[in-house]
Length: 248
Image (cartoon, rainbow, N blue to C red; front, side):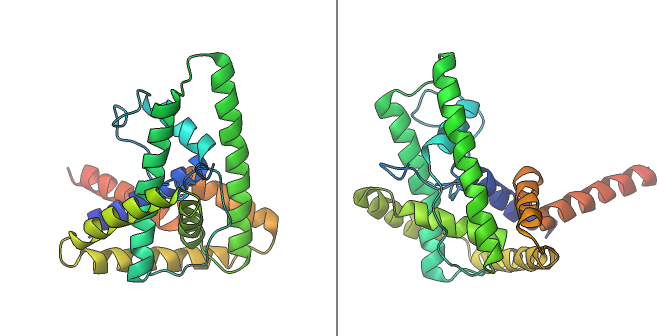
């Protein structure tokens, strides 16, 4: 059970990173395309950073891809969503993470984007920083309006997905439907249970925040260190390690 929760936490953290990139994301993932996918951007927002060793296609390293993602995928006002997601929203979110990532990869390849010069690096790093600041403000406002970080992040990824070319959206949706349909029995229910539990912990934390300054500090902490449930799991894992060490 712990491993399933850890997997869910990692997915949510990836979205948070994506969001920064994109903000998710999105990531993801996920300029609205021609702009940029989510991100979120952590985004969403909607997507995840590429696996170690780079990503298929674009000849860039992981660090450069992350910067490109954050710079190219512009934040967008989050759609209103509620966790657990319904079937249609879940498919759109899966499509957003995959579609935005592909859009970024294609843009890097087709336009030959690179970080080979200081000027290029500084340009994209500034774009990424500006997008992160915008994404944080969108999250703060969404939280002020009653959303959790997860809900705001997913909502941003969905909004960013709408900025992709129509053909890219359709292709991503078809792949998302296939991906969701191929999941093992019971995975959807378990994933929704863990997401709901994590969302409840976020609501408890958010209830303690009374000013925009406190909300902004909390959002930045989540983006940097992970949401409440992820911190709790890290603490539990550390306690398990210490208990095992003490038992030897």
